[in-house]
Length: 308
Image 1 (tube, rainbow, N blue to C red):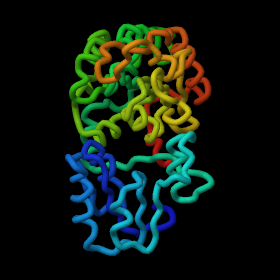
Image 2: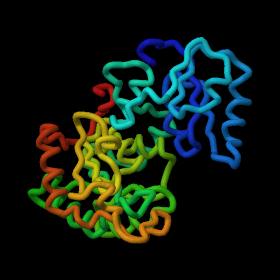
Image 3: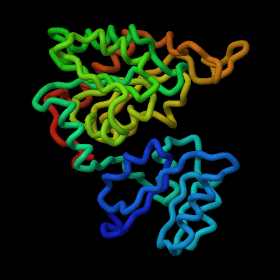
Image 4: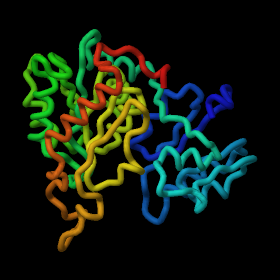
């Protein structure tokens, strides 16, 4: 849309956690953060905020009633015609009728750039790691992350001597802290429960490689052009893998359905990982393959976003 309407003014409505990911986009004039309320109250709130204006274009990726109840010249709505077996980026492109969907891309505010510059030292190799996730079932064991990190940054390793930035959202500290503590103090960068998602994404843009579980953090790394290796278990990589030629994933031998096929499975009560069958050696090979495919590009970062 930015390429087609470079002077268009954009209003974004999104979940409150994602708010900061849109504030840096050049044409955004307003971001409306929505926090889910009982009896669909958040949709009523959105209708009240948007019904007073006539819109040139409405794009609705949630197939909500709101997009049908406000004035608009054109509407693009995620409906039954979308092939839900395709990757989410392809699905988004289908909403707009695009044969080739545009890759996700992030832009940053001056405050987000300052946060990133303060956290990530310039001129150094940085390995970013996301060892947590919002559901314990899709978290690879911390001790295995530790083993792979040591292999990567060891003398002669694929990122020998690199500093390690460990990231996690508030509430995920217990998953991420052991991984951070395993890194030598002189190479340690603490990104645990710090900054907004937009600021953290900006920090990721200054790193040379990202290794992490299937999470929003992983998708942010891919969206800023960092070589990104996602680790998958109880999720569907063909729909949710990181997007781009600079990305890859490795997965458990079992698919989602097979991993949850045990007596009394309850996702809300689950208290252990479902990814123990993903081996350290398989992840090491995935790291090596991705670095080889990206030309061994683990030199200190430049701004990759213009190349996306």
